[in-house]
Figure 1 (tube, rainbow, N blue to C red):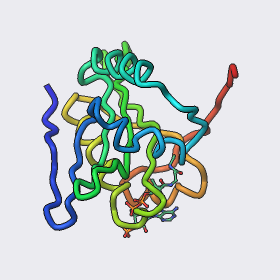
Figure 2 (figure 1 turned 180 degrees about the horizontal axis):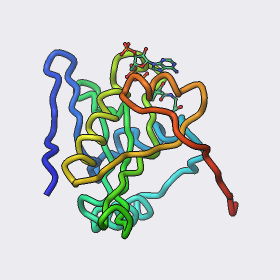
Figure 3 (figure 1 turned 30 degrees about the horizontal axis):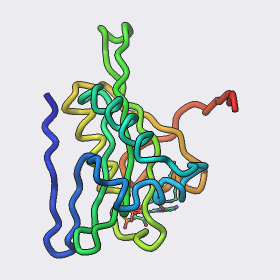
Length: 158
Ligand SMILES: CC(C)(COP(=O)(O)OP(=O)(O)OC[C@H]1O[C@@H](n2cnc3c(N)ncnc32)[C@H](O)[C@@H]1OP(=O)(O)O)[C@@H](O)C(=O)NCCC(=O)NCCS
């Protein structure tokens, strides 16, 4: 089992933890909308997707940072653990959907989210963690300990 537990910054009233069902009411979807296309999600759709992700247990974790004073989600990121045959049936962590609220950037919250996710990958026995990012964010991920490798390819169906 993974070792991650909530981490609290008492001074700033910030809690770094896994996504909870009540986070929809704390601005989680609005935060994702700062990253990419994310139409409004109904409560039922949210609950169904939350249950689906939860059923994957430690193989799919969504991390959030809550500003507990305001009851708002101000940063998030997710990780999916891929199981391979390569590398002695090794595991790889895939990080996705990292975003910090525009009013809270530059305060090390992005770094906190990445640490939570990479700690999780390490505790799950992954031999590496990978992600795609824009050139503008390359320096941020380098500060988090990542190195540029290869080329990103994509095929969109919609
Ligand atoms: C990219 C993003 C997640 C960074 O989060 P953040 O909380 O502002 O970053 P942090 O404060 O944790 O920064 C950590 C370090 O990276 C540096 N950094 C952050 N963004 C940077 C950038 N775009 N270029 C260069 N350095 C950057 C910070 O200066 C800081 O350096 P330090 O440790 O020496 O002080 C945030 O800006 C964001 O949400 N952007 C919009 C959405 C997005 O592009 N997400 C990434 C998808 S791949």
